[in-house]
Length: 465
Image (cartoon, rainbow, N blue to C red; front, side, top):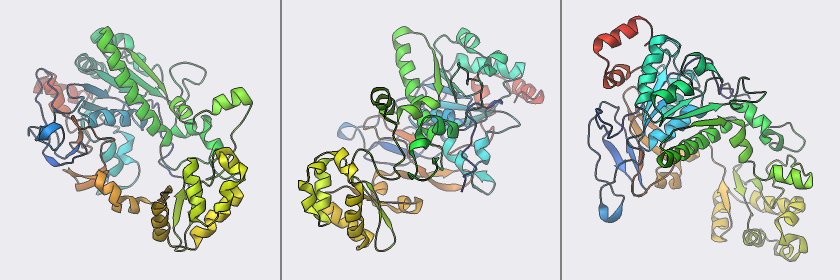
């Protein structure tokens, strides 16, 4: 069944709408805000759950040497303007906000960010937005108006990063291209995230993550050998591009530290997806080899597959290491194959996948899932149960890592969502609040920028806000 949330434009024609976040920025003229901590874990992530209005100092945490208080988030003092929509650009900004950047999400006054309406909602509030919009301040601004343009340039003058994903030429048409932005702030980093990049024959085509998954070669190698190319039922290409964009931003900022100048990041969603597919270009270039669809099997090792247990559940087995492959075959009662010449390499085992799968699958099919997992763990062989989201939410390892954490939200109460991406022992990231209502922080952000209440009212009256 096709997921209607999959085809999301990477380069919309209209300005984005969004959320924003407040952190202790240390920026002159701005207040340092941090939410009350729900808990601080020893792994270096602090879940904070208050909206931007909270003004509570950072707590002493359990991370760092000798029980010292955390030094604060590592990106505190960094201001990011998120002009992007659906999904790579906004998620990149979220990742920066999770580690302390002040992210100001700019949405169109009359066309909120489409992610607010994607997927299920509760009480009329989009749940996807609560995740994508966390740690962001939400303001509205019509960038196609002269007044909106002027406000954006004022914001850019006091910012470090702008993330956008309009079609190439859109910002230039509004008088907000790199020339104008750099004139206001030569230290600015502009991250431009599009489906196909800023130049080339496809540059102005509409871009979707689905297209990147198809054009990168991912879909061609995904699925059963006798079945069609298979697309993922979630935003895989967008998510990989978001991670890549956050990395690119940090690389550009490191470059700025050396040169004193900002620069433009040209992120084409088709390229990170191509990168994660590994050595396929090399294989084709040097050997003319085109990787086929192999289902759950691998062309590099075996046994590697999903197997059904006696109680109708599923497990996944991997034998990338030779020692693991040997342990698996001893466990399932086929130690004699270990002495075969072909068993000594991953490629050799892959060529005998039918025989190995039959042996492993038959043994697993005689046991319940918990018995299988216990036996594999005792044998120090690699296995994992195939989880759905219910299993993830209840799993003891995810609980130990606090991978799914609680966030208090002003609209929906207690929410559970993915925690920040990794743990830092000295300067942990945090979720300070979930996605904010449309335009909730417009007046506060513009007031911090120096606009009077009268000026803000006039902008709203003329439709710029």
